[in-house]
Length: 355
Image 1 (cartoon, one colour):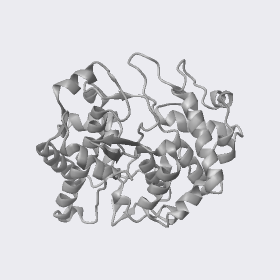
Image 2: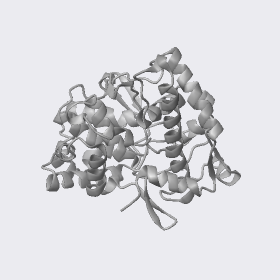
Image 3: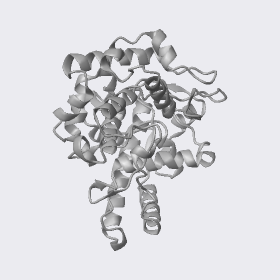
């Protein structure tokens, strides 16, 4: 059995050769963010998962099916420098990145294509996929054949083991975030985001953890989305959060890794440097979360506010996107695999409840 993402991060960071975490950086950013929250309680806030125009508006089994499909396919949308992005127009808006996937899925549903059905996914052809995920730019969706393979895989497993519905997986978890995470990674190979470090199996489970978090957010921490242990979900180790953490001087790279990043070296999943970057991201956010909650608890103005890794992950991703001009000079690691890419929505949690 693999170590958990948090255990894996701690192990890898304890012997990291190329990536370092600055305790001074952790302290500085923690204080800065808590000060921002004192001035504006909703600085790290929850706009509402359902408020995004592409997300389902009803919290029901259909929404769970939608979440499962998009999280199964939520990987590798980056575009090489200078190349036009994959883009989907939906309801008169242009969408790129993860949101282009959501737009394509919603477009298909509007056209009467039952794309969230396990049976449809199991029997998806490449030609059908080319139509469903057609681009409104000159750049087609990356890794389309791999996405078809993933859809066939997850559709078949849902039919074979879970009565064709991901809601069955959710309910088998009995309201336990870690149990649901384990059900996903034990049964769906495309979510098994693991590697080997010093002879030990380690895990990151980026998309599997997002899947748990999305169900939690869609149901606003109630009903099928009410999970014990939601704070045990770590940040979602991708390649954009490290960029933000380096910008905030929480993380740093040695000369060898920096040179590879600047040269736009293409990393492989499970490569040592790639794992060090992802592990440091997880552990950095864990340290930030711990320190921020310590500061929050000691401040009467912030009573009832609680930060977890999900919230902080989304804040950092959103900040990087909003301040792209300032952050873009920091290189990020490039990789093509089914295990990660990231999107964002943000929350505020008070007294353990999403509000």
